[in-house]
Length: 258
Ligand code: MF3
Ligand code: CO
Image (cartoon, rainbow, N blue to C red; front, side):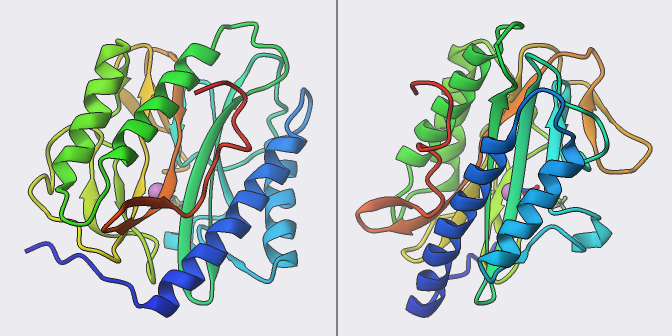
């Protein structure tokens, strides 16, 4: 049986405050994105900002993950370790970050285009962000996980995108990954009911080519085999009777009109 954690008022307050800090971190990192900046530099900016805010990085040390951010470029899907690669004009960069504030994790990701959009990535970004919003709209106490998955799936399919089904959203709280699984297509945990006071990370990941992917020799970075680009947006959402409360709102960071 999948057991969904219900957060206390104190835990929710901590996640609300932590989520606001995480948005500040992402905003600073996105603000530093430009041609010739290396992924390692972005990672350092994130770590310094998290530390300056009095928080701790969620990913650093998680299953021995060695960095603060995941920075997945172009055909990188998720979990790519920042390295010395210097960003090029038109690259699609997905930046995923989590932090711990008062013992509670929040998790969020945003995809951006570096400099001018010379490869035309913005429609892909726009579609994946819209799918995130469509899934989020289904969030309400008593809703089933499958409703969220279905809304994301419908939105991405309508835009003829390929869902990377192996990568899923999740519950989040005292641990980075908690029950339930929140897939981007109806499947796992579809009948799990979300109670008032539960918190989930919704994270559609989709591309314009095939679904086939491999993992880099570092054991982390997942990439499409056909080289097709993939975008990723994620936010942390509190489930309430009145609907979703997005704890890590990305609207001030995105580069397009949703
Ligand atoms: N946001 C990522 C996820 O939910 C967290 C990755 S943790 C890391 O999959 F250690 F892989 F970075
Ligand atoms: Co996540």
